Image (cartoon, rainbow, N blue to C red; front, side, top):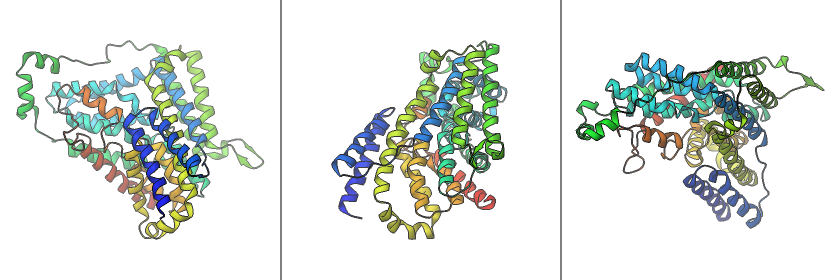
Amino acid sequence: MSILMILQLLIVLGALWVGSRYGSLALGAISGIGLALLVFGFGLKPGSPPTDVIYIIIAAVTCAGIMQASGGMDWLIQIAERLLRKHPDRITFLAPLCTFFLTVLVGTGHVVYTLMPIVCDIALKKGIRPERPCGVASIASQVGITCSPIAAAVVAFVTISNTNGFDITIPRVLMVSIPACLCGLMAAAAASYHRGLDLDKDPVFQSKISDPLMRDYIYGGGATTLDKNIPPEAKRAVYIFLLALAVIVMFAAVPSLLPSWDGKALKMNIVIQIVMISAAALMIIFCKASPKKAVAGPVWQSGMVAVVAIYGIAWLADTYFSNYMDTMQAMLTDIVKDYPWSIALVFFLVSVLINSQGAVVVAMLPLAYSLGIAGPVLLGVLPSVYGYFFIPNYPSDIATVNFDRSGTTVIGKYLLNHSFMMPGLICVFTSTIVAYLLSMVLF
C-alpha cells in the first residue's frame, strides 16, 4: 500500500468524519470535497453515482411522505400506543418490536419520533426505568432498515448482488434478515430488562423528584396520540401503502409475473419505483393527502437527506476503490478467503463513520464481491451494516435522550458510555450470527 494510496484514503475518511460531525446534508456535500480532491487533485478516474438506489429512495419516501401527510402514520402510531398501554409491564420487549415494525413498513427509522415520548411516559407511570425500553427501542428503529422491502439497504443489496452473480430476491433477503434481527432485538431487550437501578432505588432520580417542580416536569408529560381523530382517508392511505408493499413482494417472489422484452424481465428496481409512485398518486387522489404537507413532513425530508448522503458517500467510495481494486484484491484476498465473515467488521466500522446503512451497502458491497466473498456470506453479515449507534450522534438517539424526562437515557461523560451502546452491540452481534447461520442453511 503506497503512501499516495494511504493519503487518498485519509482524504476519504476525513470527508466522512467531517460530514458526520455536521450531519444532515453535510454527509453528502462534504463527500463532494473529497471527490473533488481525488479527481482534480490526484487525477483519479471518477466512479459512478448509485443512481438506481437513489431513484428507489425517492419513490419510496415520496410514497411514505404522502401517507404521513394523509394522517396514515398517526393511525399506525395509535395502534402501537394501544398495544404498549395495554401491556405496560412488558414495554421493554414491546417497544422495540413496535419501532422495528414501523421501520419495516415505512423503510425509514425517522417515523418513530412520535412514539418515543409515549414509551417514556408509559415506563414512568409503570415505575420502569425509561432507559430500558427507550435505549433498545431506538436501536430497533434503525435495525428494521435491513428488514424493509423498500429500504435502500435491502434494495441495493439485491441489485448489486444480482449484478455480481448472486441470484437473490427481496423476499429471500427478508427470510434471513427479519428473524435474525428479531433474535438480536429480543436478546438486547432481555439484557436491558433489569438494566440500571429501579427508579425507586436510584438516588439520582429520587433526588430529582424531591423537587416539586422537577417532579411535575418528569411525571406531567402525559404524551399520547389516542386523543387524535383518525379520518377514514388516513386508514385508506395505509391500506394503499400496504397493498403497494404486497405487490412489490409478489413480483419479487414470482418474477414470471413481470413483463419482459427480448427475453429480459423488468428489473425490480423499476418495479419498486413504478409501484411506489403510483401508490403515492392514489393517496393524493383518494385520501386527501396534501403534497405540500408531505414535502414539509419529517419522513420525506429525512429521505431526501439520505439521498444526498448516499449520492456523495457512495460516489466518493466508488471513486477510491475502483481505482485501487487490483491492489485491494491483492491485499485482502487471503484474509477474506480464510475468514470471509471478517467483512462484517469492515461493514460495521464504515457504518460508524457514515451513518447510513444504504450508503454502506452501496459503497462496500461491490468491493466485497470483487474480493471473491460469496453472496450467502454477504447476506449473512448484512445486519452488521448498522454501526452508527457507536458514536451517539444520530438523530433518533439524540431525540430519545431528549424525550426521556427522567434523565436515565443518557449520552455519557466519556461519549461512548451511553445508553445505546450495550443494546446496540448485543443486537448487531446476535443478529449477524443468526443471519450468517440462516444464510448458510438456506443458500
